[in-house]
Length: 302
Image 1 (tube, rainbow, N blue to C red):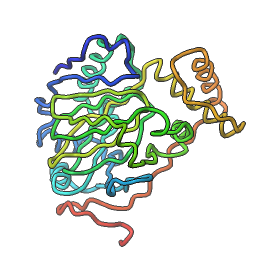
Image 2: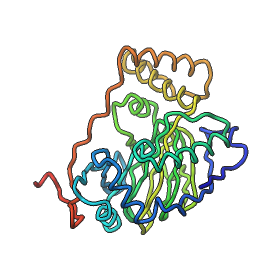
Image 3: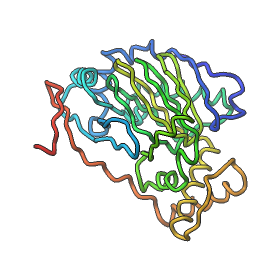
Image 4: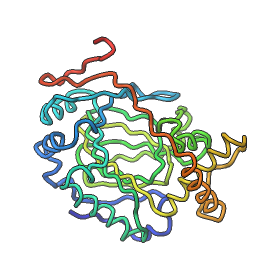
């Protein structure tokens, strides 16, 4: 397994978009048999099962489901034939075979960018044809690795008007999920990238994005991580959010890793010791993927 990033990534990593080539799509881990086995091995209670309404203006929220009794093989078939998005978070800590994948991906990033990676989370995304993932952003840095199928990423500039400071701070404070308010006018500023197997992409920290799958089963790796500059920014966002809510201030989104960002990061560490951030509230489960048939049962009607 190998990754090939462009030279010169150290100059703008975390602030610019970079593309890589890889050969993970050739690994048997991502064959139908490999994915079915992964779904049987991964702790089912940790599996994220989602459906998405049509993309539109405003905030689009995912519906949260479960798939407790269905086999990995049948669940994979249900994804292929339905409208389901599976997220196997932190698979690098749950399935031994993926620890090698973790080292390969993050080792290649560290070598190319000259930065140490921290808080590594490799998630496997298995999703249905034509599904659309809502407009959102991530607090950590992200590397999206395309393994099977084709998907189109719509990537927007970080900051206002695409993501206002107050919304980004609320995500950092865990007061809201990652969804953002979308406006159709944002499309004029979007970079549209079509991802095929063998491609990988990393983009500026906190840049909003949304995803459209092609007419095929999709398998990707969503690799979240921090570097020291990214961690400082995330903690500065946390402090800004507290300043806004406790003192009524209106701080701007943090810029580069200067004295102000460093000072706010230190304050955030102290604030978290005194007042720990809330755990993310569990999203209500509203549907279930049925064993055998793979059909969706609406739990509200049960």
